[in-house]
Length: 67
Image (cartoon, rainbow, N blue to C red; front, side, top):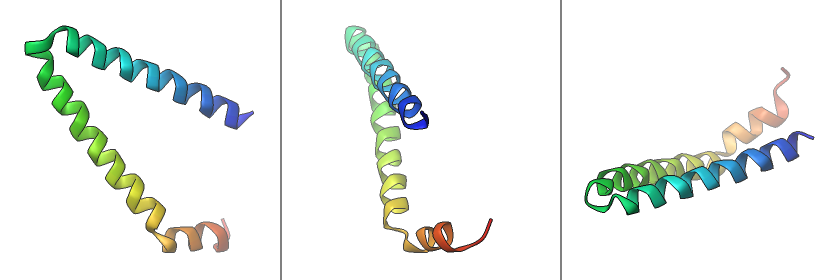
């Protein structure tokens, strides 16, 4: 059930992002600033996700430390 909820949220977030990008492209001269901001946030998100996936210490504590 939780996986389905996450999948629905992911689809809605992707559609929302596509709508934002389409709106900024439609307002081209002024929308470029928004596109740059979305690109920068995307780069930061990828960096954080990469760091989390490569961090073995977090994985160890998640699996072995009692809560």
